[in-house]
Image (cartoon, rainbow, N blue to C red; front, side, top):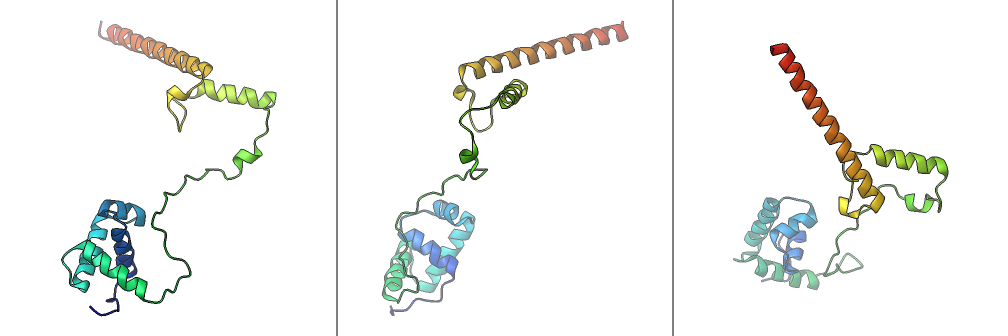
Length: 163
């Protein structure tokens, strides 16, 4: 084979680089934010262009020829790309928090915790403090009581209408 690459699209090049790193189609699709079908289509197209039967062979040829060609980029790609870190929904919010809450903020927080239904977003009930667990149990008991009373009133109303 010649020392030049066949005309590959940027997507085909990305897929072949990741195949050379040992990723499967599902992992490549997740990293490139495309469907698994798109990855397979790009790899099949590059197989035809290289004239080889396997994706590993196409990736090996692509990497060897790409390393021989002059690099337009200053830096080589990393072998292992780490996953993106979850971003803070409100950047700088942790820096703006005071060390102590004033009384008004404490009351608002307590009121929100009492009126909140279900576990807090972003965590499970096992991560609640003792007072949070007690509040969750009280909320569940009150809501159950209200539901039972409403059901009994509905049944009583149905009997009075029918009886």
